[in-house]
Structures are given as structure tokens and as C-alpha cells.
Image (cartoon, rainbow, N blue to C red):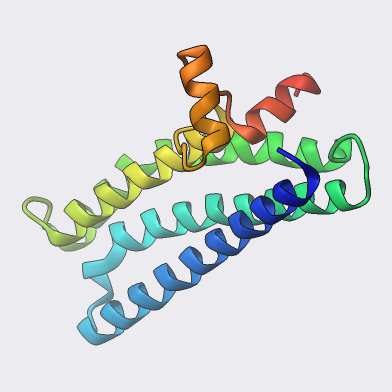
Length: 171
């Protein structure tokens, strides 16, 4: 992929993550405020916060990739990469805390199943898990010819973009 196409791709990726984040926030606020009872939104709110944190990391990542490309630098600065290594750990911790959030919601409301909050919150948390895997472990989204060619040629998933950069720096 040439530099111009790569710059366009990075730009579309960070804009897409930004648009998704803003849309998720708007939808959450619209429905949660209309409901009026915050206890109905504990699990969904937590799950959405985790997804938004990971999407924010994606926004920052693609902005840095674009910046490095335009400056003709070989790689993202090591201090930025160390920050992403920290985020990788934080993300896994937040995902692992999900059952505790569900337990806290049960302690507050004595309502666990079936609960719209639990069902939707669980689905959103699956989205957070998939985003984490996509960025830090294995690329899950193959939306252009370049990616599909790689998949056909190598018959395996490509390493996630952030994860690849971290492993190259041994972080």
C-alpha cells in the first residue's frame, strides 16, 4: 500500500473510531436519561466505558500512525508505545472486572436475570473483548483488498496493529 493510500486509511480509521465513540455516547445518554433510573444502566454503562476506552486508544493510535507517516519517521516513539503497553494491561483488567460489576449491580438492585442491562451489557463487553483482541493480539477486521490478500496468502490472522508494534519493541 503506498503512502497516500496508507494516510487515507489511517485517517478513515481514526475518524471511524471517533464517529463510533460519539454515536455510542449519544445513544447511551439518550436512552439512559429517558429511562431515569440509573440502576437500570450499571452494567451497560460499565461495558460502554470499557469499549470507549479501547476505542479512544484506537483513535490515538491511528493519529500517531498518520503523524509518523507524514513525518517520515520509522516508528512511533518508545514512550508512546510504553503507554500502549500499559493500556493493554489496563484493558484486560477492566474486562476481567466485569463479573464484579454484575455482582455489584445485583447487590444494589437484587435483579440479575433476565435483565436488559445484563444482556446488553454483556454484548457490549463482548465488543470490548473483540476490540482488545483486534488491536493488541490478532487483527479481526479484514475490510480491504490488502488485508484479504494477506489472509489468503498466509492462511492465518495477522497480528493486531498495536500488538505488532509492541512486540517489535519487546514491550
